[in-house]
Length: 381
Ligand code: SF4
Ligand code: SF4
Image (cartoon, rainbow, N blue to C red; front, side):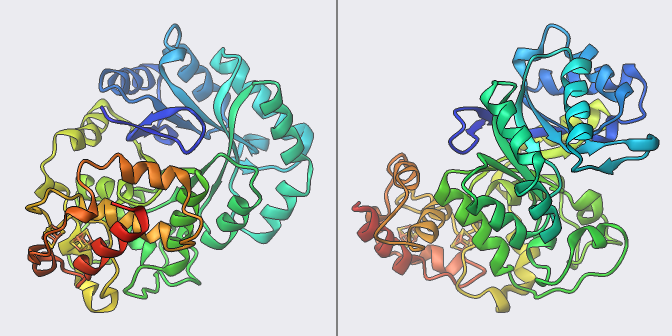
């Protein structure tokens, strides 16, 4: 397994994470087998938003004696009032459900306490100007959550959340289809069966959000990595062919700030399939040909796909471009974390021999040689 720091939290998560929603309403044996499969593959981040007592108790039981092996991402405001899954901003209710989460999991703390489902202006106001935030900050002060995060599907609202300076991480829906949706598309409607408008370009708001997170040291845990399976299906994919699990995971993990791609699994086999990403070759992970269908519209923008490799100077071109994209947001104030990531690259942009082979291979006409020069100038190597 590979682990990445989750922003500046001081915690590192496996790049493949377990989304647990498909364990709802499943027998204990299923929950236990999926959790054991995840632990066997050294997955250490589990997302648990489900409010139901039974599934929470089942997860707690399966984790008995193993709690310290996982980072739990638990949600503040996820409830099931009247036996129906619901979002609440009522302080008494959210407190009860969060206390129950600790109780049913038989733990004293949740690693990532997430302000739940902040998708609209009203959600933002209700949470950040209401009692939910105060309760979450109190939990953090008490050490009952180790870091404070938020979940969202809306790039404009997520940006507002990040700009409060109060959250340490963001759980956000990322996949190639959502990233190409037009700005007025609410992606959950697409998952619900309605059509989606495509700009046939990477949505600038989403791309800017990921860069902003990287700039501010906020880690992203990715949800909807497979768009609820739609990207794998010839019938539902918006592209001319389906993507594979490996390609979807690779797309998520190559976004700036991405720490872990969470995959919802209801069987051990699904866990193994997701974890097989670690053993996949570059050609199996390469998503450029699929999203490159829209290359005319994406000309010049790096999508971090690495299709341009191999580089004779062994430069990781995608990562140099990624750090450059963040550095140019404010050239006089490059975040130390980004400069440090750049310094840790085995080969710097200054080693570019201008051979041009990458530019011949790039499906998106990225001016790599120019970018390498700019990166070498900005980062000093
Ligand atoms: S330069 Fe082109 S091929 Fe290389 S990572 Fe960027 S988009 Fe992909
Ligand atoms: S032009 Fe530079 S970055 Fe591109 S393949 Fe050649 S040496 Fe590598």
